[in-house]
Image (cartoon, rainbow, N blue to C red; front, side):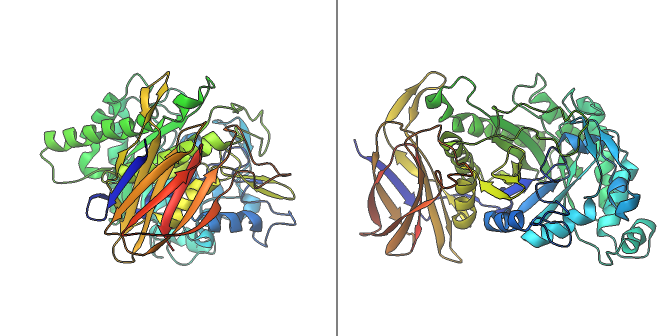
Length: 493
């Protein structure tokens, strides 16, 4: 059987928000220190920013970056990270049992975000922090000179307000592990009041409510419903988190994890629809998947009171890259309700980029993210896929292909994104690309023969994106033979 994929330019299923292709930086392990910021390194510029990491992140081009946490956020007081560096306190950081020097803080991050051309997504501490502290940070970051915290920013050398638009109302407050953990009603009330005072400081900002931190939480999705009912008219997004893994070494099931990703979006979309209907509201709240990634191999999370400890520095392989590609396929297919996505994280800590003193390594998951960022825009298209299935222990029969597509009518830019889950055989595919412009396409592929293959400093290009040349369209049609264990992108040449 030859698989068939029909992509029709008229069959739109959601507007693709560019913020779906974002990232995350937390004061954890070596994400900040030795990752993006390393004063004294021969690879650092005069500000302490590592130039190799800057270049790699510019190439990756995340559209929005969430900062400063994560669990770190619930014990962090932003005052510690501003002003003269010599006067900033060195503190014990309780989330990751590390020493935090505070030499990188709000202003350094805002400057870094500008350097890589990304939108900042800041978080306020709703664990040990107060709503007053949250409002003060918005004033410090976004207000023009003439009030206490705005003038404090000016005194620190930053005359102009930043205009940061997206703000997280804490992090994973449903989790007992969280510093200052609250139940749903307590958190909902605190988040509502924090969002009110923050929006009084700047009415243009958008706030993100903490949703359930995991599908496995006993309070999911009741937590989400409760918090939404309390906060609906004062917030703009509901966060969702998920980490995937192959702990059972069951590659066939692991390569079908997109089923879980899609189900999580659909479940929370149902909660949004229910609360909006119950409240008779005309206000819309969207989903922000602001922590997502593969993570299961490195579980080191105790910094043992050291600076920049090596924590959860996951090494990614080919099957991980294919799961990441499917995750991004889900982002497109569910783009009607899902508007923000933050790959957790960007450097060293469960990240597409690893650093060492003499350079960096781009891991396998770097490449599918980069390809989506380059070629997915405009509207998501509802692709019709007919293909064989294969058997999995966890999900039963699963299609061998996972597909998404996009088309931007204004620019003529489009892309078709295909994961072949087969491990043992290529998959012949007939594509019918109706209404998409162009007579020739470019094909790029991430593939390999070993699902456990990884990139190393000695062999950095084992898993990468490989151009497969240009192919003519015949009446909008194309036939390809997709390699096993592959992610293929087709776009106009």
